[in-house]
Every structure is written in C-alpha cells, then in structure tokens.
Image 1 (tube, one colour):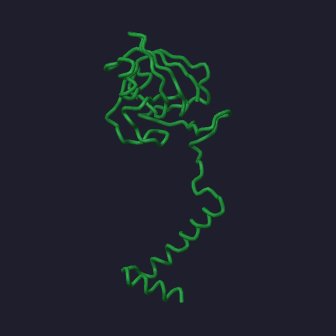
Image 2: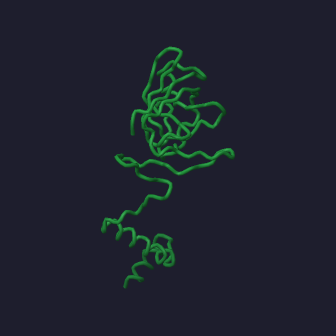
Image 3: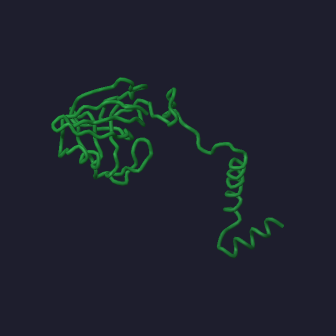
Length: 171
C-alpha cells in the first residue's frame, strides 16, 4: 500500500520511487533526532569552551602564508600597541566565527586574541576609542596589529592606517 501511494505520488510529480527510498531514511532520522533532543550539529575540534565563558571560542592553531598562529587561551591582561588598518570590501563574507561580516558593525580581526572577545581600540593620534568584538582572523600584512571594520575605524577618526593601543575587556 505504501509503495502504491509513493508510486502514484511520484508519477504525479515526476519523481521516482528510488529517490523516495533514498530520502525516506534520512527524513526519518531527522525527525527522530529532532524529537529525541539529540543535537544534529556537534562541536568539532576547532572549537573549545574557555572556563567561565558561555560562548564558543575558537582556539585551534592555523596557518596563513606559511606562518602558524596559535590563538590565546586567555587574553586576561592583554594590552598591545601597534598599527591598525580597516577593512570593508569583504561585506557579506563570513567571519572566523561564522557571522556575516558587516562593514558598519563594531567588529575587528586579530591574529591571536580569542574569538569572541571584546577589546578597546584607542587611536593614539587623537585619543578617541571604540569597543569592538573580535570575530575574525587577520590582518596578515607585516607590522599590522588589528583590522577594524569600516564603522569602527570611522568611530575613532581613522583614515588608512593608525597607531593604536588594543586592550582586552572580556569575552
């Protein structure tokens, strides 16, 4: 009876029984996992929880242009001075934590700070500062400390490159 129903349905909508036989077990498993409370997505080795945090952080080492970077397990007490740049052309691309990049957002990229983490970036030329969330990796150009979103760069009056301090505020 079931196959007759599938045959009628499949001929009516130009589908074949083989497709249905292949899809039915997947649909059944999907429904079963949804009803049983078993998560369908699981964290992989790229992600680990830091003690005291509620968000996922990304701590696996990675390699860019032949250089290996190891993200910090904790940024407590982190403060650094260096050159900041900004980026905006990547609008719509995904960041390292899986969000879509918004050039108007208050976000930044850093090579080793934990993702996510909140930092204060201060423009040393004018004293203006902005608090941003680290949600991406970079910059990968020589002598660059941090890449700010266009919105964050504008907030501190930055055009092109600027000498800044970056201070960790928390997760």
